Image (cartoon, rainbow, N blue to C red):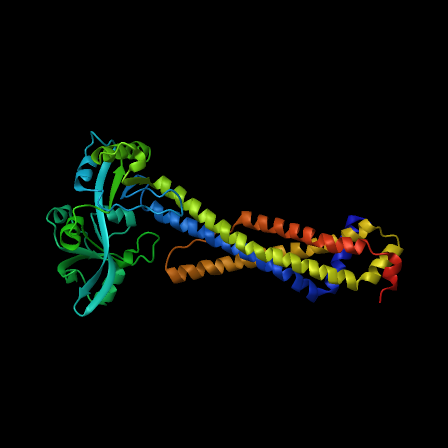
Length: 412
């Protein structure tokens, strides 16, 4: 029997049993749409995170205390006292660290912020104006504190939008005084509303001079991190190498395996984030793909029922000259068509669900979440759907081809 006749016969058989055909492909539709949705959200998450990292600037190098994490599931072994003022001064020495334009320390800790009878729990960052470049945001009301304020250990603060709203409501915050850990701070600026971010929730931040935070809020003489800016993207590797050599000399470290700090460039961070999101997306996609196996089993069961119900038809076709191969091809084509149609519908459903999820995340998180259709996921889904139809349709097709024409014609 010719291929086009086999296909025509298969489509006719599927059209006769529309309800059964729809129920058969439902599992395939769920599986494919789940894969498309998961991969779409994963791609959007990766783009969002990388977009946040771009705000840090490709020239920015981060120095953190403790042992460097060795993988996505590892965490830094903290030694919070390893970064000191001596390290900052050494890093600012151009004879020791080349191509450096800025070196700024940073400390952070949550505190309760009070104003009148209102209070708000927020992340207090002791920093300089370099943080405005890292978060890519500048005060919409008032100004940011100056270098003179840092030198003088001034009690001044810049509030995030959410902190300002919870404490002051519609009233003007600039010029007012808030209390942080029993110390009064004058509000000099307020950031505009940003929405939730990946690394910094700017809306729930309060920024004060790092010298003030060290002495009056934390009572420490070390830093939680140091941010360094190189002259250009090309000089970042050289600068990072000089930083490691300088800090090892300061800390009397001969073996790099014993470093009590770790240096991170934005390129390394991007690679790490990409690896993590890639692994998570693959894991979730594999979980979603389990429904394809369930759908394949359902397809096999329905095809076996179809073989039983069409026993007389099989006998008649054999009596008219159809070979075992013709019968097997017909049922295989039916199975592949079912899963193929399910794959197409699943891709369409996944596309729509991906768009809906994107708008939902934008509205819920208040972030610029972009939609990305996973072409690779669609191709993979169609390939797997066709393979499922072929594999799980093979047994019913073989059972149909092995029926005796005489016994089949006698079947009631």
